[in-house]
Image (cartoon, rainbow, N blue to C red; front, side, top):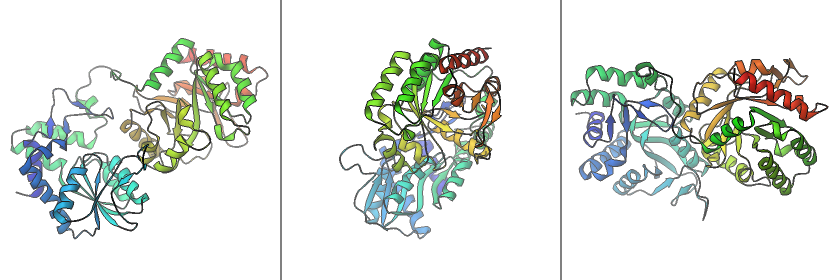
Length: 458
């Protein structure tokens, strides 16, 4: 029996893999699937544990992989890395998804030196996002990563692309198609259901609605707390208006908020353009937000690697994580940026489109942003964009560059009118100069508030 089939048999016999066509499983990303794989149970079976550890070592030897250390991905990759390192008498480290917030704040635990080559050990590959984040963490620590070995892969299309982009060779002991074949052989799966499983593998996002959905998709039972609060504010104030306070002094911003605070659900700040910033400003702004019942969205547009954005978010002179209700980010750096911005109290907004003329956010970029949002749906609550192409109640669309009339400014900013923006699916309009440059910002904000809410609820 081939190694891939033997490992697939282990997964089925230990019930690490479960199949359910009557009530498909719901992943954390919201994807509904007929298959669920939990390889953590494998360490409880001594003979199978030994067989899998041997298979890892066989892959290393057969491919003549060069390495100095074995690196386990926390937490599920750690025991397998330990078994392998022990058998090969090699040093071992493990890598966290993000650095500790206390002690030595290490991302990589264990002894190593810069330039060491590591083989990364993982138990399961779905999209590959978390595994690649771990590999990047090792690279940032000065460790060379050329190869990653996992017990099982779902063989999703984006997985191969992600590993190719990072120039990391992915080796797996078994895979989705082999598992499907073995499940049929062992009568875990009918030939008809095998076809369904393979079809899911080709299009996991839309598989459930195609085969099972007979009514409108219900909203998930649990939601991000920030999103729930935002929706509550919107309903209470009958407002889906966000004002962009792109002003450069604290007095200008606080004076503006006094005038428009009652009309908005969100205030969007650019904290790093304020010339006279002090922590006292944040205290005053938070007090106004509480009095006037709006939330604060810091338009920081994070765009660096995970470790850097974590410091930009939590530290520096602004300490954004301490006061913002939500922040936004580009997804160009990959999943690592979302790992760095994970926070139970501050929600994430991803940029899927921009309103400036000639911007480089292509449809493919938009699709990848949406896929990452679904993977990190516990933290991401929406997008900055112009068109709602993802119909998912967990995510709101916020559209910038909105005025009462369409137009373009001399710096290439393109403006939508309120009704057009909402017809394209936006939930919240973002208005800047159209309000804060008006003779009476309060009255102008009221015009936008009433028109946007009325159009949104038609």
